[in-house]
Length: 108
Image (tube, rainbow, N blue to C red; front, side, top):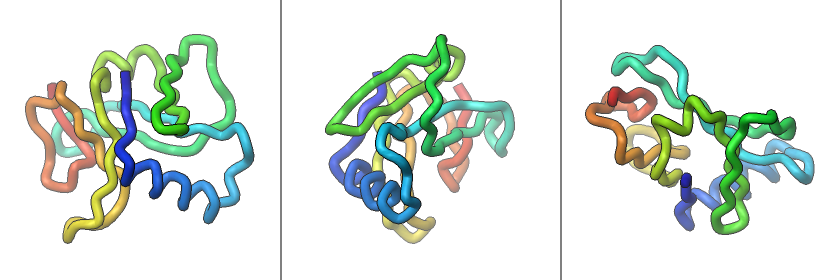
């Protein structure tokens, strides 16, 4: 399961409106190799769902993730941070054993 904090929901709704995302678009999250810790988070709006995608909905936000990425992201909460390191969505990932200071990559 992937959840969305109240602050992240507000931020996603704002981004969706600013970027004129079409009705039916969702948040796609994923993981790829790279970054300073070995694995890198991916996040974007999408509207094409694939056969092996897993779909979660929390607070009215539809989050879609492929099965391979779900192994690394299960239990993750999408949150919003407006701190000194920049503002935007952050991954609170209980599976990460190490993260980089920017929060964009992790290791398990």
